[in-house]
Image (cartoon, rainbow, N blue to C red; front, side, top):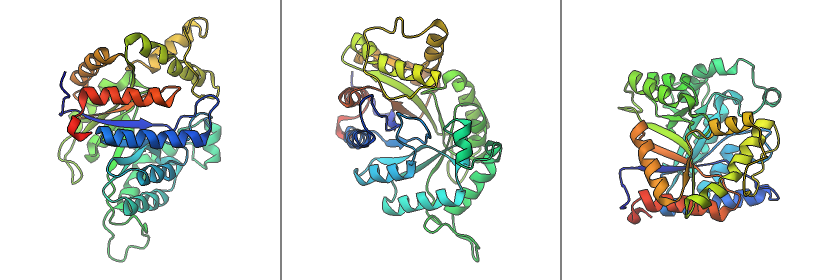
Length: 336
């Protein structure tokens, strides 16, 4: 089947650390993936903020964004996302203003309001227990710091002022969908781990969207787990790494990516299996024909403007191959 040029695809990376691997290795693999994704025609490469999660190395998100942007040439690099209530809006404006000055026209600032960690770790981040409730207020302040500098403005983001770094709102529920619609901002739904409220959030975003200086009409991105290999059987086998990792997350264990196993039988109980399957409820797993069909069905269901794919494999070679297969199905050869 010929690639569909109307589909926009991007990559979500967590700088995952494999079992037996190192953080340095995960950063090297992140750069390899970003460079390959750029060559295949993916639009963006986003990294996500998490804390106190052994197995995920993207805690210093803005630092890693700069590292990836410096190792690539054209792909947009950004956060998917920065958890704004963990930070001072001024500091985030300075960080992303710096990134925009270094890599002009290539930086995205995706924002979430969750902690990206457990409650105790959130305390160590000096996060107020009610910080999520102040998200709209913090967002407005951040937008001011990144926007035009007013005459006699007492506090400026330097760099950051006048940079107008594109802001996205991220969410796994309806709150950010409604806020993004009200403010006329692009919205990304976290279908890669919380697909339950996806269709409701999409409907709210589209129904209540108000055009703004940033965006004339709704722009929806959906996160999606995509685990592709040369055959359905091989993809299902390799996907056991992702299933084991989520199982460990549910159990509160370190989530280093484990090697695949022949079967998940005996590794989980019925309740755990249902929890993992709910987490991966939107996952697209299979060989090229299966993935082609399922992705097109998903696009028809959501009418998303863009998909941001997360492929979680033990071996970096399998990760790269997964994204390459999808690019071959959906992206123009000329773009690659």
